[in-house]
Image (cartoon, rainbow, N blue to C red; front, side):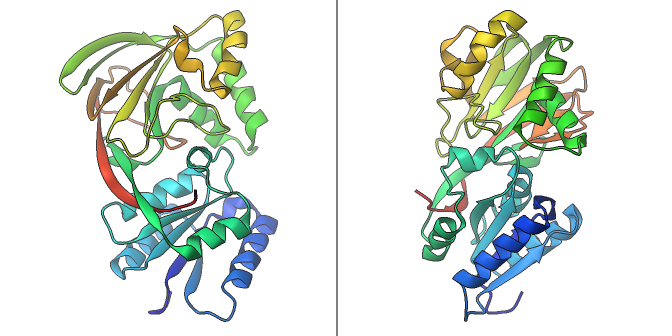
Length: 294
C-alpha cells in the first residue's frame, strides 16, 4: 500500500485459487498502467483488521471487500464514521448483503462502479458492541450458522441440508426484550435483527427492511409444523413471509434482549459464542459510505 493508493482490495483466500486469479487478473486489467490500487490477501482475521485500520488511518479512499458477508463485516466495521468508502465484490456463499443491494456479480460491471466512485450512506449496527452491517440473530439461525461455519463444504445445498436436519429437533424458546423502551415477551424459533432483508441465498427474512431508515427490523419467527413449513418455505424467496402468521416484525432503534440460555448469536453469517445475560443492539444511522452500484 503506497501513498498513491486510492483503491485497496481485501481478498478472502477462502474464495479458492482459480477464483482469486480471475479476480486479480480483472483488477489488473481494469486499472492497467496505474499504481492507484493495492491488493491484500487476507491471512487471518487479526492481520486483516490491522491492514484495514492502517488503510483508514491513511485515508485510503476506497476499501473493497472481496468475499462473502463475513469479509464485508470485517471491512465495514472499521469504515464506519470514517472518510473511506466501502466497495463489495461478492465471492462468498450466501452473499446476502450483495443480493440485497443488487451489487453486480459480473466483475467488469462491478469494477466500473468502483472506478466511477459515487457513493451513498447506509446504516450499520452493533450487537453487544460488535459491529454488523446486514443481519444478526439468536435462535435457530445462529445454530445453523455455527454448523455451516464448521463444515468444509459450502454452498446453498449444504446450508439447506443443515436446516432440514436441525429443524426437527430444534425447539422454540421464550424470549423477553425491550425495544425503544417498550417491553415484549415472545415464544420464538428464532429472532433476527435485520438491517438488510436476508440471510443470504436470497432467503428473505424481512421484506420491508431498508438499510438507510435508521431502524432495525426485529423479526420474530414462530416454528410451523414440518408439513406447513413445506408451503411456507417458497414464501421466503417470494418476499411474502411477512404476510403469514409465522413472522412478526417490530422496528426499533435500540433493543435489549434477555439471554438466559446464553445462546450463540449470528453476526453477518458467523456464529459467535455469547455468555452475556443481556444482548444489546443499537442502530448506527448513515454511518457507512458505500459505492453506488445501482
